[in-house]
Image (cartoon, rainbow, N blue to C red; front, side):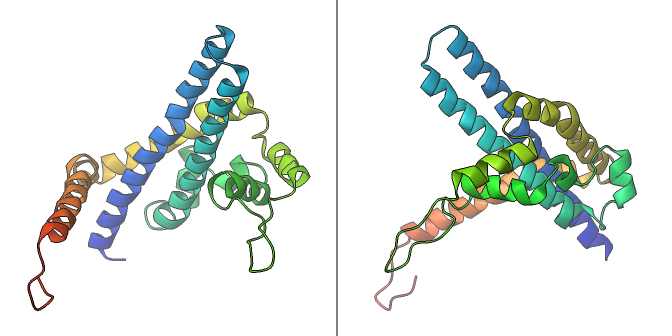
Length: 206
């Protein structure tokens, strides 16, 4: 792979890992807040449970994104399998213990709400609750506090080490995260706004 492609991949990987760190860290704080509010009886148990569900859904999304970044941006272009293991980021599918079960949870919570889609003759169907319950147990997600602890103590520090290694090896990645990508994102939004606000000519073109 040519050097320019490697640099671009490093920039994009660093951005995705930075976003994943936020996605995995913020739910940790929200869970603490939810527990404190419930213990002080400032919110109902139902409200606190809803917050915890949002926390776990966000965490599942974050874990999934780490796996996608690892698979499509890190190996083999920026790191070898051994290098990632030395940095503490082994296969994410092993982290969740049962990837097929994790896919069930992720799909039900953060992707498709149905096990079967609706057709012209029948409505959609949810995944069987017993199936989802087994998936939660096999992945450890059902034990919310323990799963979040593992994410906090094992996964987040490993992601940070990998991200920091990229930033150290590819100096341009830091500028991409802080200025290049945000500015390009803003330019795209401004260009689209200007395009939308430009009136059509009589010939139908701008």
